[in-house]
Every structure is written in C-alpha cells, then in structure tokens.
Length: 391
Picture 1 (cartoon, rainbow, N blue to C red):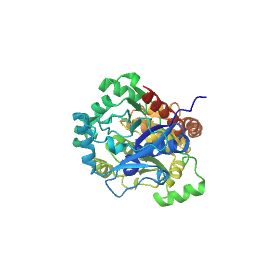
Picture 2 (picture 1 turned 90 degrees about the vertical axis):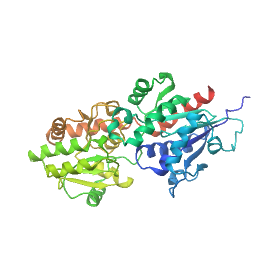
Picture 3 (picture 1 turned 135 degrees about the vertical axis):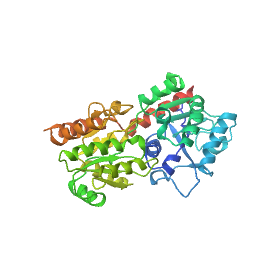
Picture 4 (picture 1 turned 180 degrees about the vertical axis):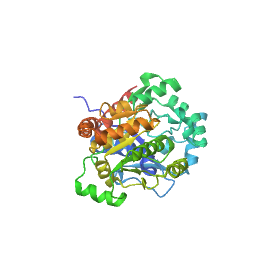
C-alpha cells in the first residue's frame, strides 16, 4: 500500500503582514492563514520575517511556527540584493527550520514581496506590479534605483513567479523577458468581512469618519499613482452643476502628496474633500456600503483590491480603463481614462441620476466579486509549490 506524499516544507515571507497595512500585507496574511487552515496535508508552513521593530504577526497567524532575522529594513533589502549579486546563501539558515514530520522533504521559500535573497532551496516569487517601471516619476528616487537593479535579478533567480494579474505577467515578459511558462497568474481574493453593511452600521461609521453629507469614496494609500487629483477636479465640475456630494478619502499618507493639497486650495475645495486617514478594517465595509459611488481613477494597478471590496459591499464602482483594472472589474464597473476628469465627472453624474444604473452595477458587482476568493488563491498557490518542488 502506497504511503501518502509528505507535506512540502514551505517558508513564507510574512514580513508584509507584520510591517505593512495595504495590499501586500493582506496578500501575505490571507494566503498564510488559508494555508494554515486548509492545506496542512500539502504544506508544512513556517513563517519568516524581519523582526526589526516591535511589530508582531497578526492574531490570525500567532500559532504558526516562525523564523526571524533582526535587521533594519535598509540592511535587509540591500543584503538580499547583495546575496543575489554575489551568489552567497547567507540566509539559508535563517529561512530553514527542522521539519516536524518530513525531514527528507526539501524546503521551499516563497517571497511574498519584492525581496528574494539567494538561497540553495527552490524559490517562488510573487510579483504584485512593476509600477516603478511603468510610471517611475511616482516613486522616490531611492526606491526606483533599488528596484531597477534588484527586480530583474529576483525575477531571473526565482524558480517560479506568481503574478497577481495578467497585466503583471505581460509586464514581466515585456520588461524583463521573463519566460511565460515560468509565470503563473493567480488572482488575489476578497475577505468575508466585505459585504453590505446594515443601515445602522453605515450611520455609525459615517458619523465617525465623515460629515453628514452624501459622499463619493476613494480608498488607498495617499500617493500620486492613485490619482486623487482627477477625482477632485471631477468633483469640482460636478459642484458647478449643483452636486452637493463630498469626496471622502481613506488611506494612510504615502509620499509625494503635497500637490493634491495645493490643488484643493486652488479650486477652493477644502470643504468638499475630507481626509479620514487610516480607517480600521472593521469600518471599511460600512464606508463602502454608504458610498453613492467608489472611485479608483488610478494611473496603474497591479491588481485593484478597492474595486472588488466596493463591489462586494454593494457600492457602484467607477475605475480607470488601464492596467489590471479592466480584467478585475469585468463588465461590472463604469470605466474612464484615468486623467480625463470630464469623463469621470460624467460617469459619476450617470450613477447619481440615471434610473436603475446604480442598482444594476451593484448586482453585477456582487456577482463579479464572488469570483475572487482566497480559498482559490491558496489552492492554486499550493499547485505552484508542488510543481516547483517536483521539478
């Protein structure tokens, strides 16, 4: 009688879940949680992260075995690159751990953000986007220099690459000549907490984060790529037409955002735009549910969590017609060119005034969002692990 195959030992970089709060953090945390909950027969998971601060793993991952290094973030980034350049496996011991069940099964390392040290074991690299290549002016110079030197090497070194969208796969092929058969497109998912909120919950959260006015919503880190400027100009056009809505902007401060505040002064829009800052995860669903429309006029997205979160919560969505957003939104959103504020204003006006349009988008959006699940993401990721280990 044949013995079942032993679980594959995988070390997954949980650093984004420890130190970040945006899309990369969600990816690392949700994928790890799914692997721990549903794939223990296939994967014996160890979490790895750089313990350079007092940050810790989220509660959902507290029971997982862990391995850590303790370096400042710059040292970790530069030494990961140096190890690839010099082909020195200085992190082999850091990412390895004795197996509890399968000592003879090789370990595999999964880099969930754009850092892949040189290792002797098989490696999988998740690439979320190559935005620093497509719109470099919206990255800091230091980040541009590092990523342009490092990413081609990380991509070449990985045994397999997970791209979170077909757009990212196309970018990898076009910009780095990465072999197509090495790149596996695996969509990310939607958390169960994103669903239409009850009216009482919507009212409670609106009172916390916004004046009592109808609002349009943007969610995401405050950085030029998210293109808040086009949304503000579109709202200025609508204000001239008598629209009284406010633009509610949710997200932590990123970089290079000063021009947006200057634009608000120039257009006399400070009373019409409210910055809520970082909003707790438990409040996001209600903010989505209460919005008359959710806007993502982004210049470029590797995936586009905001689109699916809004749809899952029953909000009509208007997004850009570029990068990964058309493949994520499908036919369940209105789309406009990212820097055409006239088209964006017209799309908003349609949702506010055209009979039946908002309800139609809500129905299509709910069906679209239901296709994106972390369970499927984890299952497809395990298949990549097994293919790499078997090869």
